[in-house]
Length: 235
Image 1 (cartoon, rainbow, N blue to C red):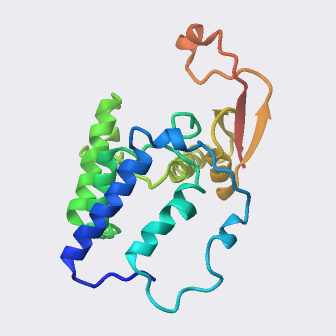
Image 2 (image 1 turned 90 degrees about the vertical axis):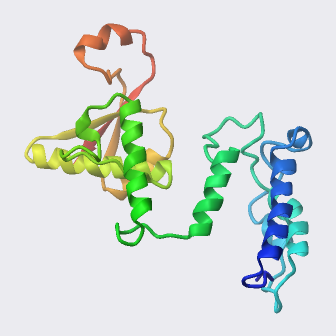
């Protein structure tokens, strides 16, 4: 429970400036990484010693909240911006990305239909068309093309993996219901692939041999590939 007077623009601006200072100094400042580690020295369950057992009876002032940011959040969290952190990808840590989050949070629109958010819906369609053209994909992949193609933006990489596998399964079933459906992927992919396969009831069997992801005419370019592959059987 946080104290913020509804409709107090002045207070909101002041608190926003304080919060921006924390981000720019603690996360993006020139000395930020010198006083932190990529991974915190904490063990599961640490948070119970840092927080009260019960929720506060009265709203807390923002000054107190800001004091808790360093010991509770920053010092006890994985530092995705640390120069020695190489896992995954901090795609939303740039200043433009943060500004986009502020704009999105302020609008608080829900884009489940065109009527609920016309600009949100069509901006997504236009942006994915830009991306498809940047990748050199055929026009059939464009939202603006009369064909069946359509691009959508997912919230996370795991969501994107799930949607891609659901689409692949649906297409495989519709094209060859009687044949065995397989999908190939590398064993070096991240955990989101396994999660997505579990959700759509597809089993993954590791195959101890090299599987080319390219067609025959490009095989000569992949002869030295030495990463093991996986075959995904769709049942």
